[in-house]
Image 1 (cartoon, rainbow, N blue to C red):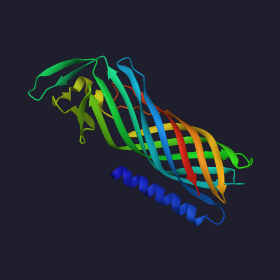
Image 2 (cartoon, one colour):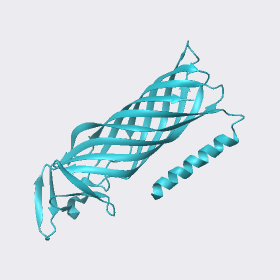
Image 3 (cartoon, rainbow, N blue to C red):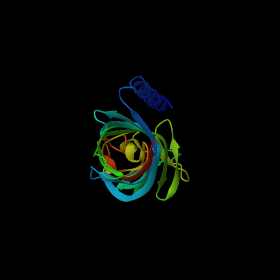
Image 4 (cartoon, rainbow, N blue to C red):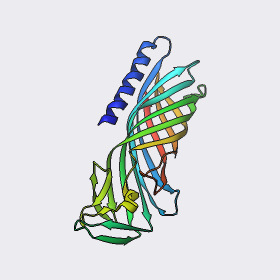
Length: 241
């Protein structure tokens, strides 16, 4: 909740800046829906890549024009859901009775939702009939507010205090030696690259169709024992007023 308030404050400051400079710098608002496909790229031999998954994002677009109207600072606030899976070669778990148990190749499937605040530059061509082509580059920052997991195809419960998952049936927790194997990093940062078209409907109203690729620079997991990053490719459909 604290992280969400920070995002709301940042968005309010952006709106305030747009309002103050509205006469000199026109701005645009819009809505988008972005289905995506995400996957884990392991960066340690302990972690194995699992199948990717289909998720979706939706939210508000805010653009402020710079210069001649073909250049924009683009931001907004979105909810972005990623689904992905990974496994590790083995793990030792502590059971409620104090004993430990060994699991070979435990598999973890994740569904994580983020509040996302992109900070990008958008450049578009002059009007060609009813179409403009655009390119986009910048940062995408996300903070997790909900996470679900399945461990070995069994639903797991979220431990808010420690930010990791516990198998709901066997009620076990990772031992200290591999405690980070199923914990999710609350912050996600990535380089955002996008391209697409704006189709003029009437006046200043445009339909937007575009592709988006996120190249992450933060780990999907907390701690320093496991390393992997969640890449994402999305198809953005939206309308800008």
